Structures are given as C-alpha cells and as structure tokens.
Amino acid sequence: MQGSELVRKFTEQPLVRDLPVDAAQAVLALRYCILCRRAERDPMPELERRWGNILAARRYRLVVEAIGHIWPDPFAVAPPCCPRVSFDEALLADIVIAAGARDRVQFDCLTAEMLGSDAREMLYSALENFVRARAPGRVGGL
Image (tube, rainbow, N blue to C red; front, top):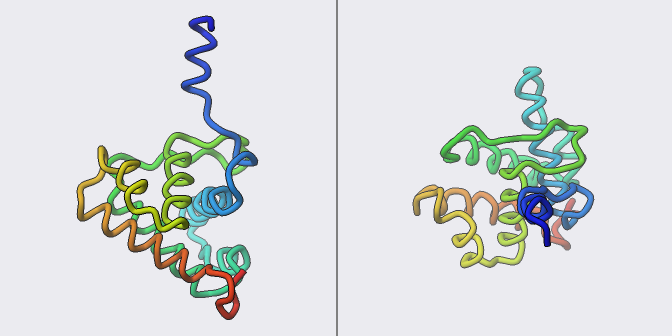
C-alpha cells in the first residue's frame, strides 16, 4: 500500500449513509440541534418527528446537552449537507451503537481517553435513557 493511500485510509471519515440507521439518525439530529441553537429555534418538533415520541426527543436533547457540557473541546459538527461525518460525529455514532447494545465496556473504551469517569457516567446514562425511550414496543416508539 502506498503511503498516501495509507494516510487517506486512516483519515477518511465514513459517509453518513454507511452508518447504522440509529447512529446516522443521531448524527443528523445533532446537526439539526446545532442549527436550531444558532437560529434560536426549538429543535423539539423535529426531534419528536424523527424519534416518533416526545419522550425520546426530550431524552435526545439531554444527550446533546450532556455532550455540550462534558466534551473537552468544541464538538466538531459537519454542515448538514456534508455526506461525511466529522471525527466527533463518528465517535457519537460509535457510542450510540454501544449504548444501544448496552455495551458499557465498549462505550468506556471509546471515551476513556478524553472523558473522566463522572463525565462518562453522565453521558452513558443520558444515552441509555434515550435508547430506552426509543425501544420497540414502547407506546409511541419507533
């Protein structure tokens, strides 16, 4: 493998469309929340539509607030029309998948270098509550 091909392979971010559905939805919803914040609009109607129930929308908003509170640097969000995810969005996708699988070990492996134990606990709890609100069979759930 050529050096430039190797560098490209390690730095190229995945396409949103190649993410698992739940992870892609979380990334796109985060982008929408950021746009709403900048425009001083409420993202809740769109989040409720996206997740199918108000409880999931509220809990996703808490996930976004937790990220804003605990992330060590500004969270890098790609523009809404960008087909590729930022490095932070890729991590969000991975931790959404881990929380959805109730895989705390994987979640901790993904976040331990950048978040302390209290921050990890806060974020995992927010994600776990969001995932439960979206669980199939829940009234109003997807």
